[in-house]
Image 1: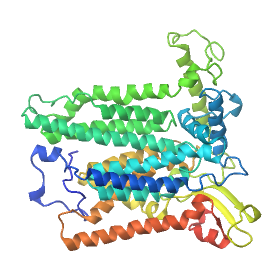
Image 2: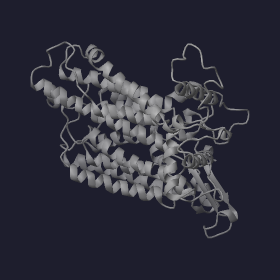
Image 3: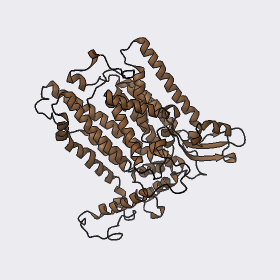
Image 4: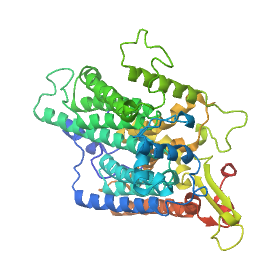
Amino acid sequence: MAVREAHSDTLVVGVGRKPPAATKPTDPLQRLIPRPLTDRARSWVVTLSLTVIAGLVRLWNLGYPTDRGTPVFDEKHYAPQAWQMLRTGGVEDNAGYELVVHPPLGKQLMALGELLMGYDSWGWRLSAALAGTVCVLLIVRIVRRMTRSTLLGGIAGVLLIADGVSQVQSRIGMLDIFLAMFVLAAFGCLVIDREQVHERLAAVVREGRVSDTDFGPRFGVRWWRFGAGVLLGLACGTKWSAVYYLVAFAGLSLVWDACARRAAGVRRPWAGTLARDLGPASWAMAAVPVGAYLATWWAWFSSETGVDRHAVGHQFGAGGPLSFVPAALRSLWYYSSAVLRFHENLVTPAHPHPWESKPWSWPMGLRPMLYYYESGAAAPGCGRPGCVATVMLVGTPAMWWLTLPVLAWALWRAATGPDWRYAAALTGYAAGWLPWFLNIHRQMYFFYMTPVAPFLVIAVTLVLGEVLGRARDGVERRGTGLLVVSLYVGLVVANFIWLWPILTGGSITPEHWNAELWLPSWR
C-alpha cells in the first residue's frame, strides 16, 4: 500500500475526493517529508491546558462514591492486592485471594497512590486518575503529529476528556486505564519512529544512494521503536490482552517500513523490508517486550512467598527436558498457565452477570456497566426524598453512536486513499476489539473497550479534519467546516455534561435517572 502524506494542516474534505493532479507529490522527497510543525510553543500551551482540564475533571471528588467506605465493583480485587504489595515488597503472596489473575504492574501503580494517600478511595484511585490524565496529554501530541495540526490535536484532547468510558475508568481502581496509557504511549512512539524513518530515507534520496541496492538502505538504531517495545511489554505486565496490540503494532511498523521504502523509490520495497527490517523489528517488538514484561515481575522473582514462586519441585518435578531453564522462569510459566486456565474457563454460566455484554454490542456501547447504585436515604442531595446515585460506564453517545460510520469511512480512506493515519487508527481499534470474538462464550464486559476509546477518538478527529478542510481552501469553505466541527465538538461536550451525574455518582431524582437511560439495554 502506497503512502500519501498530508502536506497541509488538515485533511481533504468530501467523499472520494482526491487532490488535484497538480498537488499530488511525485518527487520522493515530497512523499517522505511532511509539512514541518512550527508552532511548538503554542502547541504546548494547548497540550498543557487540556491536560490540566483533564486532571481537574478526573480528580474532582475522586474519593466518592464508595461502598460504605470500601471499594466498589472490581476495585474489591485490586485495591486490597495493591495494599498488600506495599506490605510485602511489591508482590501478592496470599493465594487465598484466588483472583490474582493479572500481572502485577497495574496493581503496583495503584499501590503508589495508596502509599501517598493511604488505604482509602483516594489512595486506590489516584494512580488511575493520573493515568487517564496522561492519556489526554498523549493523544493531543499524537494527533498533532499525525495530522500536522495543533487544532486537531486539541480537538482530540477535548473529545477524550469528554468520553464517558475514559472518564469513569480514570476514576475507579481497576487496571484498564493503565493498559490504555501504555498502549497509547507505544502507539505514539511508533508514529514518531515512522517519521524518523522517513527523514532518514529522505537523506538517502538527497545523496542519491537510494538505488545502490534493490532493497534500499538500512535504517540504523531506532530508539523510538525500542521505546514502543518497552511500553508494550509494560502493557502486557498490566493485562495480557496487550499482546494483541503487540502483534498488531509490530505488523503495522513493518508495513510502514515497506511503504516508506516504496515512497522513496526502492526497487523492491517489500523484499527490502524482509531483508533489512524484519530482524531489527523482531528484536525491538518481540525480545524487548518479553524482557520488559519479565521485569514487571521483579518483586515476584525476589520473593519467597509469591503465588507459585517455588512451584518447581513442589507442584511439579524439577527434572524433565526443560530442566535447563531457570527454576524461577519455569515456576512463572506454571503460575501463568494456571491463570490462563482460569481465564479460559471463565465462561458465561447459566445465570450470567447482569451487566455482562458481548463484543458486538461494544462499538456503540449498547450495554454499559453499572458500577454503583444507591437510592433513598443512602443517596441524599437531590433536594427531595428518593434520590438516586449511580456510576455507570457508558460511552458518550455523540461519539460512540457514530462508531460504525466512522470505522466504515476510515476503512474506505485507508483502502482507497490510501491514508496511513486511518489505517493506524483502525489497527489500534481492531487490536483491542476483534480478539474478543475468538471465544464469545467467555464472560466479557464493556470496560474491555477502555484502551480502544483513544483510537475511536483518533478516527473521529481524522474525519473532523476532513470536514474542516485544508488551510488553503477558500474562506467560505473553511468557515463552514469550522462551524460544523465546532458544533459537533460542542455537542459532545454537552452530551458529556448531561451524563456527568451518572459518571461520577451525583445525587439525582428518579426522573432524572430515568432520563439518563436512553436505551432499554442501559437498564
